[in-house]
Image 1 (spheres, rainbow, N blue to C red):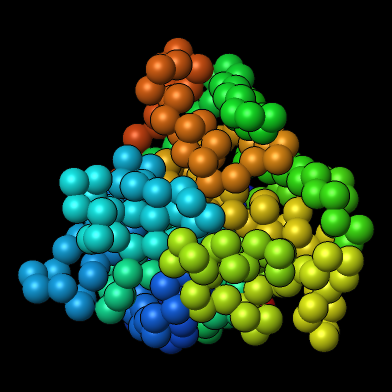
Image 2: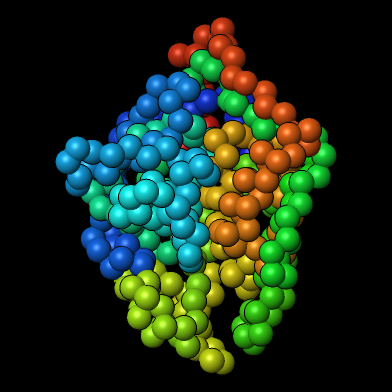
Length: 318
C-alpha cells in the first residue's frame, strides 16, 4: 500500500475497525448530562451499533437513517414507539468514523447523548488515530449515484449527483455580520477531513439560548463547546478557528448525517442552507427513486491482510 493512503480515497473501498477500544468523557450539548462513550472493535459486516449500557436490558440502536427519530438541532437515533430510548447528537462521531473509513464499531454509551467535547470532531479523530485502525478482509458496501437525486424544503436545497469519489459542497446564509453567505467544498479523504473540517465547532446565537433551554435543549452549551455569537460579535475569547468556521461545521454535520446511509457514497452532495432534517429527507428519498442509484454489495477480499494492516497503521499515524 502506498504511503499516501491517508491522503487518498482508496481506503474507503475496504472495511475497517479499531485496533483497540477508545473512550471519551464529557457533557451532552442538549441534555447537560455527563456521558461516557466507549468505542470497541467489531467484526467485518457488523456496521456501527450504539448500545445504551445504562439501561437494563441494554438496547442496541443501528447507526442508520431508518433509526432516526429526531433532527431537532441534532440527529437522534432510537425507536419511534419509545422516544426516551435514544442516543442523540451522533453526527460529529459519525462524521469522524465515516471520514476515516471505519465501518464496524460497537459504541457503548451510558446515557442518552454523545458527549459534545469541544463542539468539534477534533478530539474524536485524534484519539481514534492514536488507538489505531485495522483493515478487514471485505470490501465496503457502496451506494453508487447514477442520476441526480434532489429534495427541497422551505428554501433549502440538497442533492446527490453522480461522481467517482465523494465530494461535498455546502453553503450557509446568516445575516450575522461575522457569518453572511459562506460556501465550502471538500473532496473527502481522511487527511482533508482532519485538516479542513474536524476542528470546526458547532455554533449558536446568544439570542436563541433562553428559547432553547425552555425546550430542554442546549442545557450543556457553553463557550467551551459552542462557537457563540452575540448580536454583533463572537463571544469566544479565542475567536474563530477558520474565517468560515460555520460552513465548515455544516459540512461536518452533513458528513455525519450521510454516514447513516450505511454505505460508502460514490457521488457528490450539494447542499444550500441544509441541515439534519433535509439530509434525512434526502436519504429517505432513495427509496422513492430506485433507478437513480444502485448498491454494490461487499465482497470477501483474498489478500494478506496482516501485511497490509502493518503498513496501514504506519500510514494513519501521521
